Image (cartoon, rainbow, N blue to C red):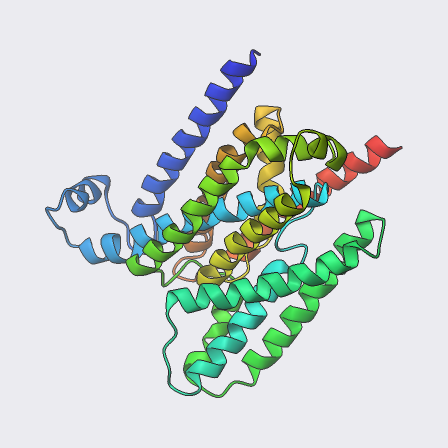
Length: 335
C-alpha cells in the first residue's frame, strides 16, 4: 500500500473511531439517552436527561479523550528518550510518583479543611512525576541494561503505590478515604472547569511536542547523529523529560494512575501506520490514546452497570497483552 494512502486511511480511521465512540459514550450508561434526545440537548432545546448529558457525560468524554491522548504521547516521548519500546509513565513509576505526592498534598490540605484547586493538583503531580523521573534517570546512569532500568522503574512504582495506599487507608476524614477510588484510576467526577484546565495544560504540550518533531527524528537515529545535525542533546533531553512529566502529571491529577496506555498505544499506532516518524506518530498517538481510553471508559461504565470498574483495570486488560507481544518480538529479534 502506498505510504500516503496508508496515512490517509489511518488518520481517517482514527477520526471515525473517535467520533463514533464519543456518540456511543454519550448514548450509553446506566441511563439510556436516545440519539434524538442527545441532538436536541446539544442544539440547546433541552430534554429529560439534559443534566446527565451536559454536566456529567460530555465533560467525562472530553476528559477521557484529552487524558488518553496525553498518556499515549507521554509514552511515545519516554520510549524515544530511553530508546526502549516498553518505557511508559506507568511502567517507569512516574505516574505512581505523581500519585504519591498528590495524595500527600490532598491529605495535608483536606485534613485542615482547605480545598485544593486544579492547578495545585497538577503542580503536586508534576513534582511527584519529576521526583520519580529523577530516580529513574539516576538508575539509568548506573545500569547498562535497559531491562534493569524497567525493573527498577516498576519497583519505584510499587514503593510509591504502597506508601500511597498506606496513607489513604489510615486517613480519618471521609473525603480523604474517598481518594481510594481515585487512586485506582477513574474519569468520573470531571467538571467543565477541570476540562478547561487540563486542555490548557495538555494542548500546549502537544503543540510543543509537535514542534520537536525534527529533533526527535534525528535523536531516533542516535545521539551522535543528532549532535551532528545541530541538536543540543542536553536541552532536547530536558525538554522530553519536562513534556512527558507534564503530560503524566495532568493525567494523574484528574484521573489517577492509568496503566499501560502509554506503552500499548504507541505500538498499536506504529503497527497501523508502519512508521516511527514523529510528524506522524505524535498526532496519531494522541488520537489513538483518545480512542483507546474512550473505549476502555465505555467498557468500565457499562459492562456491569450501575457498578463502575476501575479504568486502570480495563486498560491493563487490553494494554498488557500488547506489552507482552512487544517483549516477545524484541527477544526474537535479538536471537
